[in-house]
Image (cartoon, rainbow, N blue to C red; front, side):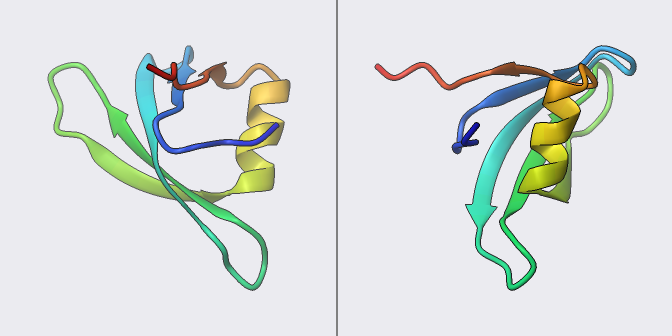
Length: 70
């Protein structure tokens, strides 16, 4: 699975909706920056390794929706 800018993630446990805002190379692997939006809260950014995000999607911790190309 390849994550791209604009892909959407949903975390059912906390009802967070996240959007991939950046994918960068790092000496230890790819880093994925996600902007999370919570209802009635300001958005916040987190960084995770690509492997961790893909593993979380496969384990069902995140629901994944690819960016729709126009």
